[in-house]
Image: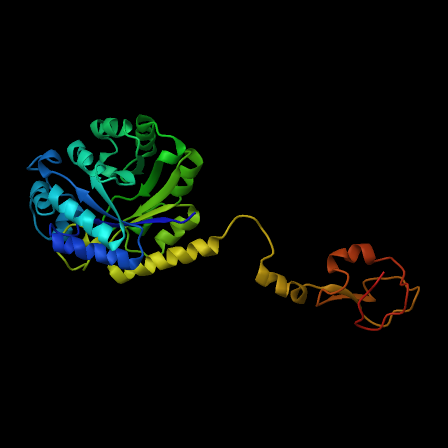
Length: 330
């Protein structure tokens, strides 16, 4: 199965439609399947005086409220329509995360392939109740959650096997390698009957490859135009060339993983006889002599009796004379 790759633009447009289009261009050039934005109304998301998260204030290098920060990163529904049309023009699929029901209703009119529930909304009963009644497929991010939270959300949504994808995630920006716990991907696969993916907030290019090797079928990765731009997420994002390289390596990983049936491949078959051994005469053997470990030897190539039959040959009598290094025949 081909891994779905979501290039997460998030709020890295800094509220600019021109930057948003530039991000679309980068995602398309990188080979991503989807580009994803975020749609929210700050007044319906946060109390005005709420402090920013620590990583946000560190990355922004200023001390303002979360509300003020979000106001500067907001896209209007009209701007989302423009971006969606631009995605259609550029032939890359559009996604957006809605943080409230009003904006989600708007996005659903655009015919998106998935409803994306972000990590922070995994306990938002009002939103989950609305999504539960929809038929669209769901991608559920599970950052900053424990297993009980995940199970509760899954039970709430009550989705069939093919209608929900669980994304493992570490909700820190950038995420530390020792906090990624990629083995959770295996845990999700063993515990739940759903497809599993990984939303990566680290700056590593190898962690998505490990995730795919572990069985992730969706990879979501933040990217930006320039990590030096002002904003909360730029420092935890890849730039265009890094995103392109990551996607190329994921595709190579998919090819290398192949399938789980152990066979002799075409190129191996050519080498098989050259690297395996047959049973040969170790020195001159006279007709009637008994084959033993002293007068027989296993050598390449495997063009006679396979060395795996050594035990069956030992103790038998030679039916003819054999020269040194001659293939044994019985």
